[in-house]
Image: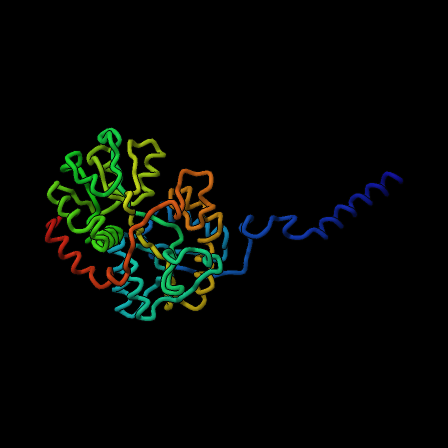
Length: 347
């Protein structure tokens, strides 16, 4: 009988403890367990970000916000702009969030009242160069136009822009065509704004040296890795990742200044009301330290510098950048492209 009473007491104690335990103690808590944080909605993201990297990020976001589903449209900057412009002119778009490399276009949308301004509290200490027009859009990680080279072809690394106009790169240097690439268009505009460091003379020297053109940064990376090109002008995370994967490539941030390629993330004011909180949560998510560390793992320079600690990725404070005048770019982009095409023809 004593054993029976003792056994029953133990059983009652177990049930009592189970009843008193909180959900977080018995099932895990919050985002760590993919729990319900109360935010729901469907989002549509239009982006030019690399498919594999942005898909990895979306999967992580949906795990932390299980009530939100994100659909993705991904293509090159020019294609994304064309799709979005066509839809807006026809009366509406499914896009809730836009994220691609054309800051001037974002300002154009904002001028038309098409951007929902939102600034997370976490961006308060982000430098002004990485956020735009009082909450219109923000950089969530930084990419820069740099010089990359094949280490089996080039024994003396370039240090600055003019170093790739030499005989070592005759017929074997390539860059993305600004008619197709938003990043290349930004690079062109910033180069011309900074005439004393780069300017049209640099582009003429490239033309005289038989420079090649490609439509995408990915193609540039592939061809410099294979040795088809000795060097390329490319966005920095690509050669960094290739180098870490063992490809015979290295890269430098030019001494006179790299070019920041703005890729702001912006919310469209036309999205359904029931999607607004989810869209804001998506922006908030970008500045969580775990997300910033994910960007570092993907090879990007984080906006929150502490995320880069212990990695080979630099911080935004480590990189010298050429000054950018957004209004100059907006006003003169057509003329810049016309002169570029005149100088290089159709490639």
